[in-house]
Length: 444
Image (cartoon, rainbow, N blue to C red; front, side, top):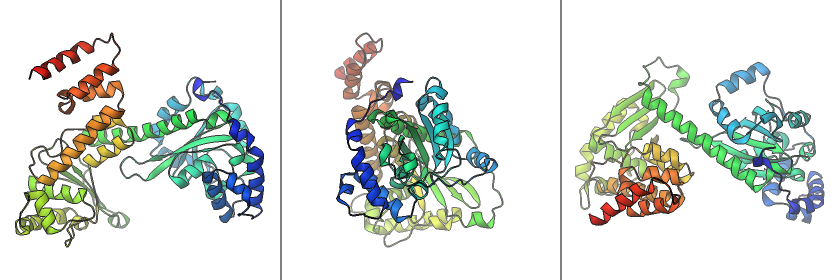
């Protein structure tokens, strides 16, 4: 068995097994206020209650939502299909068929699309319906790691008797949802099922890390596709396409002239904005709650600026946006966007927040609108640069920090170079270059 899944028995969980089983019996019987329920972990107790209120059977088999042909078609087009090799590499090292655990990947609704891993374990779990095409949401089988992780939007571990379904109680599992790296909607769930070793703290860290790695890979693939492919040719839209709301993405990192990409039912359009229009649109994207005319004028033109200076530019910007999609035209009083306008700068902040440091650094193309002197842009530029720096110093690995030290933001920062020296092994050949750079900075 791979070391990643070495057993670490939870003695406290074993000691409380009888209490949990009694509490489960009381809940299934409808005694929702039995005092023993208070001894069950809140995340489990609340999931049990959702299952009970949803009339989920305590020994119900999961629904089977797909024929084999329908399953093959559905999962071939699923966003997680391209990440399966990464998931296998991280969660099923060595010989997957003898790994001792089962790795399942489901969609946003809890339907299992891939179930792989230990052959013997899969044969045993198949008896309770833990197979591809089965619905393992809370609404179908009650409390399980994949279903409850989707219900809560966070990683969950369920130990044996904590399962609502009695058929599942011989098993333990850990699951984490996978989010779309741009919209933050849930794409699916990654689950590890087995014995006690499948629900240790180490298992949770590994499953969480795998989910984040998948999100990072998805974003990198999208960024590469956008950079490599020309804009799609206009196509004739269907009526259903035309009803889709417009989505726009503003690219401001390292660009003197921002580029706006707009996706509507009629296709995708790209336009390069003037410097002033880019500043205004960025401020509206940053301040989603809206801005008064006075405040927007200050952010774009400086303190004491009159809204009369802003209004003609807003008229021109409205005309540009209306040609792309009427939904993008900002409302007034206050000025605000009602359509979805994302920015590559916010994508970067999201990556940093999720700990995807290497991907974030590769997505950083330079400062926000580097030539802009608009006060609001300068403030946002400084905040993003500061967040990037602090995250690199506090959380980045040695390799990522060294990469940060090669870009302008980190190359002239003594704190970054000094931390690199501390993190490098004493005999690393890279130390000499760092020392030389620090000496030059000190002499400057």
